[in-house]
Length: 331
Image (cartoon, one colour):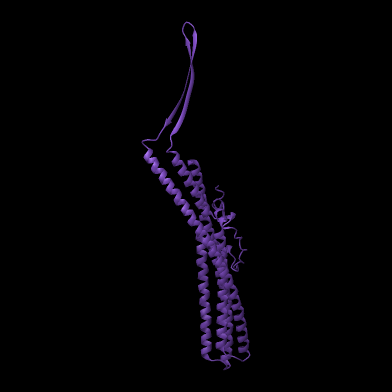
């Protein structure tokens, strides 16, 4: 029983390593997606600067022709400056994401990451949703639950081992031999013996009883911990499923808002170029459209986060041996 307890404890430790490896892998992926999201934000802001600059040039021509006011030109210059500041902020966000990714990957510099990640790389489409399976599948699919289950087994075997230490022990021993006697003649003599011993713990009995009680309490504690971990794991799955549904709905709504904002801006700009409408309506429509672009980008990022959370919450066979793979086949 003690050997089984040691083996179960070793398995729990290996599953703990897999849990840590899963956490680090998730953090690396999140940081990588942050880099891609920042790069897309930079690209969006640069397009917005071009659009704002184009509108400024149109206003300046209108002002020279006497069809626009100086306040409109000044206000549009502010819009261009604001968009330029947003580009600087987006670049700083990308640099911080690269630094975080470098730290997680054990790199001392972000220089090689800058070259290995194309500047035009964008957020990927989310992977297909995983199969939810049965709730009991979590005990095999999640490394933290596997570790908790192994600790329950180890505590149970340790409890049995401590109980056996209280029982009497029976021993059987035997011996056989022979003698060769040489005097005036030769003679042989054979000897043998068989015996049994029984020992009862007396002086260490109280200590063994305390150890058995402690082992029983430890087994109960591990069972309670496993139950709590399973409840938390089930809650993680439910939360991840709800979050994914919400983020997908939000993305669809934001994409519809983006399409409507794009059409509103196109209509207002064409009207203004044609001499109908005013600058205020064009600026409002443009700002709404550009904010919608960034909102859709963030929604796409949220969908990826929700899908990753669902994969982590459900686990799977892919979570087995993560630490061994990361350490070059430790097991």
